[in-house]
Length: 427
Length: 128
Image 1: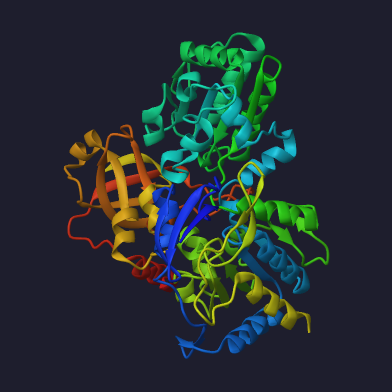
Image 2: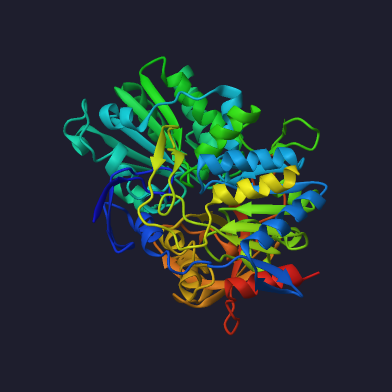
């Protein structure tokens, strides 16, 4: 049986044209997906099958009821629990996670704080001239990727949305567009570019500022900024001013480097200034398939997009204080519920060291490095493969994830696990 | 020994093995450090040799990988357990750790073991 129009639950591009071949409830092949998306559908066998609780230092299998009971007990007994992850699950599960955080006076954060958190801080300051991927496909004649390597992180981004597709006003596809890549290394995306501009590491802010100065004042005094010659900077400004419809996609090259949110403020300001001359937009290249969804759901429920602290009895948001890494490195939480994420693998050493000292509950379909140090492990079904759910694409367009196979008996969805925990902690 | 600016980032291999961190494949894809060929010549090392990468936070042993993508004086490591072992503490009051543009040192480390993800984490959480 071929199931069409399946939405891929891997990255923020949420490609919605996958075709999954299923026979006897087994996924035989996935068409149209990139390697990353296909792996999400085809590598589901190596999964966690039973709930576990740590007893005498070892994880032992228990019933789902016992695991939920223990997880609830940890949250209730905690003075300030951290609820973290949420970017690879559905909006419905995210909403329940937020309700639990509020009920137990905890702190809730998602992977934004280690990806585009600085972009969100920048957007608070200067807004965001946004656009949808559909508009880009139909109109963009100048596409810039800055500090982003979609050929590795979002492999179909160029073919579905930005460079290769034929659009309404870009009928010849690639021939109607120019691709510029700005990066500190010559990535596989840079190799495809019409023009690759190499910036010195940690110098993006200066380059962006120089571009704004040239755009607004017509001149800079330096011969070179951040490894880019004055001639190239002027040429880039001219290309940006003279295009019909430009888009600047930016990645973690801006958010993780020196300057962090200031780099993004400067990039957004450049795009804002360009709109005096032409139509130009900017978009963060969101990583996890529903990290945007978490920001949306948390914002409509609390007014804030990530790193929300409920310990005061009302939502308090202050990245640098209320985000996962700041809390862990300050040793300011005493338990953690981790869902759809693996912070032990993805956080810096100092955060991991503290995380290992507090009780941890993990909800995830797969074994990972956080499950290995957890006190409670609850296996879940895979959203977008075994469960339906809502997710937001990187351009904040919501899409419905599909169920293509029935999950193994006994496994619950993230949503159902969180609902059961919520019912327990409410009592 | 050479001084480099260390960059971390996503790779397709790291993405494919993201749910298989306890497998050998994850080590092959992520326990690596890409270096410019000239920097490797300077260090007297070849593709696949074990190197020590260190920052103010600590040290880690990984496999060297020759790359034309990185310039002289730059090193690239995929996001994951090994590079996180040497990412500096702190978030500059933003919540975001500094995963890119870190000052680091690279030197040959023949005979040293590249630990599995589980062993490395075990060592980190048990150290003083």
